[in-house]
Image (tube, rainbow, N blue to C red):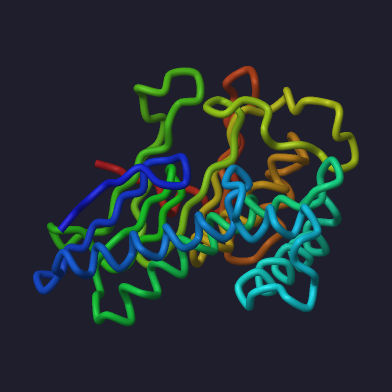
Length: 248
């Protein structure tokens, strides 16, 4: 079963290969993403994060999920040497850690329901489990940032997560906390493959903020591989990247 819905301002796709999948299973995952949107969206007036930013919810009143996200954001800030920071212009915006975390949690729901072969894709950040309908690794395309109708690489994944940070779709929405006024111009795309989509996503954002040094940062983290494209269209990738590249 496969279904796509527009949520959180992006297309979200749930694809369950296992034959016992029902509409109820699909609906359960989308209900979870709706919960996430209502809690963490900076665009919804009554979301918990906006109530926190307005001072209507105090620290001792944070939900368990909000506390977890703030702890993970602080952990990521330390591990990225300060290049990940949810404090921006006097407000908190944990979007850079919420997305991958939410996809990972949604995948856990499907695992709890007994599924072994599926993927969850939110705006191009993806968690895959098991194999596709042909019993083979999932094959996923990495878009050419200069031509969104073209894939520049196809990767094959089993039980992994993949996330891409870039400016080619949403413009300059990622910033360097050390130079917040300077747009990141030297690179346009950085894709990270990790043990799960949460780990891939939370490191892709600060790595992109580092500019060309970001690929070296990804190289330094065990279990992660990365593929960076600079503003001239030149690709640089980590030593272990090619193990995931699909070859006919």
